[in-house]
Length: 492
Image (tube, rainbow, N blue to C red; front, top):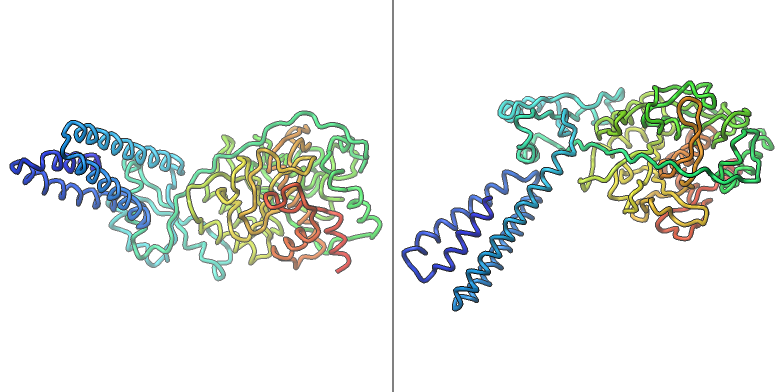
């Protein structure tokens, strides 16, 4: 509204410049309005960068409009016509800003809109804004190892409904407070559930005695016959049983092909159960499907539900899941989840991944299913995660898959028509980077079971070195080659 008023005052001043009675009044009013526009912009922006950008755009818009109208001073009709156009354009810009702001604020957790990092002893210094807006502060995370991390310094800020329309204003005040080390909105992740696929074509290569293995084309595509045979031929035994945590919608632990040492919650949606089966369904048990796990001695699969039954999670919930998995001794954390983010950098994700890495866990994340740059997706864009894209039988990137060319550690695996376990002893084929991710996570879990000391960089180096090129390796990363990976670990 302030920008429109300023445009009207400046335009009227220029149109009536020759009438000293009006121009002497309109000139000062226009300058006062401009000052209020700048102040309002400063108070309503969440960061200094946002404020500077918006102010620069406003000044450019006013300067251009003033210049054009001054050039037309000899033709009042056209001048007034242009004046109307600039008012219209200014209103459009302002409405667009409001639309973006509304979209931004509706994508936040209504019970914990903001995530801040602040030393606990400084929390009382926020009492003024807390009282002014009736804010509630609660500790966001409770890591067991508080000496090596600052995750216990994160707090969630809950804004009551009566002040929700002031969220950008509140963020601006908090962000400019020197006591706060970091602030970011606690975005809701709209979960991208994969699409059910057509029934997979049968494969003549019978890799195991599991009756549906002939429908698991991705296993023969990855030369899993060589992989399975290697374990028996070399009589390979795990140094430890690796703990693979599936952060997802839960896990149906009663499934006939997921019995044993699996643990987790019930899975209403079925997505977590599908991912668990891809990584670790019991191979060669004469039931259902096979997986990346040659036998149950190698991996314990556990689940933490971070996505609700209606298909939403939040940054705080997902990060909390990473911390809990790490504290429970995870060797690998698999996250077939994520969504497009409005943020340039998400420090809390990076801190959580570092916490997991420091405790020995490797984090594997889906690239996303929007055919976009994976760098725009979280937590695919977090530091020190291995991000997984999806490819087809012809070695081309799946049409839905995000690309990983702007991420440091990107690999790929088959992600179309992937048959796996679903709740109530059923089996379903699905498409998505969600399906490619547990193949990589399962393989890495086997690597960690044989070589527990492997780090994220070690693992990515091996996957990349042994991986197979695709039709567009730059966008997909190398295709994992499980047999070659294990061969290299054995020969080391």
